[in-house]
Image (cartoon, rainbow, N blue to C red; front, side, top):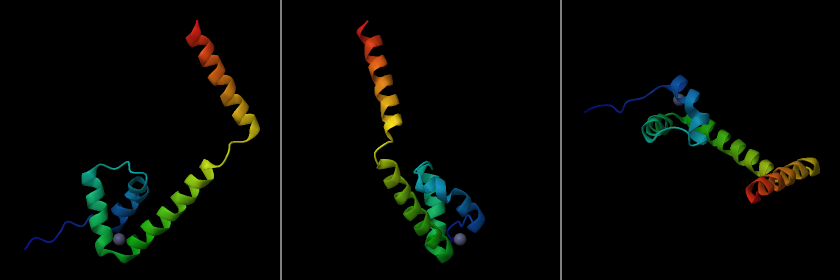
Length: 85
Ligand SMILES: [Zn+2]
């Protein structure tokens, strides 16, 4: 029986954050996930990263500061003017 290929902790951890960001291909994901299934410490690492990522996304979803909102509005207006001409 063939033992499932294990990419190892070091290799898995290098790619954990990319896995969380969904930037890995399916094959690479499977590789890292397969390792995490057999490795408890990497499993915990994934859980921590997922929590952090979730918090980060929530922080980003908060309203932008006024000066940033104004800058965005300006660029949208300018884009509209250019489009209208
Ligand atoms: Zn591991």
